[in-house]
Image 1 (cartoon, protein in one colour):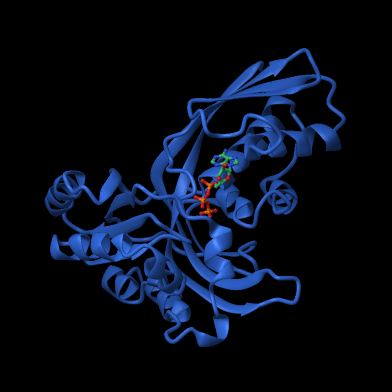
Image 2 (cartoon, protein in one colour):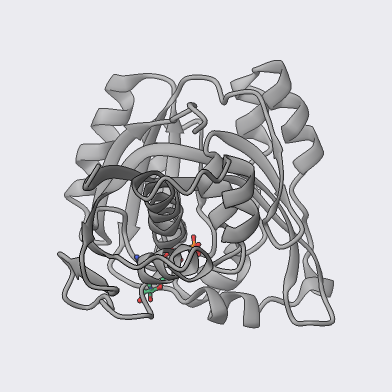
Length: 290
Ligand code: ATP
């Protein structure tokens, strides 16, 4: 095998709670993660040279060691002292710096791809263990599906698949740095913590109404204060048939959950013509594990 093509899927957070700030500066979180059917396309080719070449369709993304796909390839090439190298072609569709784990998912795909291409023989578990040094969300991106993520996001408990529904994504024309949001979060002053345990129960029962009732993201307070447009997009989603709408991760992407496709389609058209929104996408949850 000389080449492999992969899909790197995006995630949303159905729930996101921050429990405490650790002494090392990291935040301890409790998040409900869900993979959705929106993805970047990655092609990895073996090359003779011992190098990592990265090409992307977005001019503003790094194509050097600062790209997470580079870091992922290097991690395995170094450990296994590979003599050959790789050329990675990355086609981005997941919005960048948007709270959808785009970069982490790209890294996860490259770990899976390099493992297969060079027949390294690592199990999914072994890849997940190694991947956390690239980013806290990477182990989850290897796993996929519905999961509870604790610790800094790397302690994963697989959950039953999220019931079928439609997900409408809307991103305003701003980028939000995860560092800024966590840096401005005052954990001791969080007024309302989402009921993550209640959501886990609702997921186990397969009850979509109970799941959506418990949606909550403590980072909204920081991000929406800075960018009120996020609240406006949430309102448009809810006024147009979403059973609930929330910011994903540290934002600014908002997602709405719909049970009826026609309603989701109508809301999609409305958001598409709103000058508050830069990018929209109508999709569904993705429940297959790797
Ligand atoms: P998360 O949900 O994990 O917080 P995010 O959506 O906020 O992810 P990403 O899109 O993964 O953030 O990446 C944010 C930053 O990482 C960007 O500023 C970008 O320059 C850098 N980056 C490095 N590699 C990639 C990549 N493959 N795709 C996107 N961004 C990348």
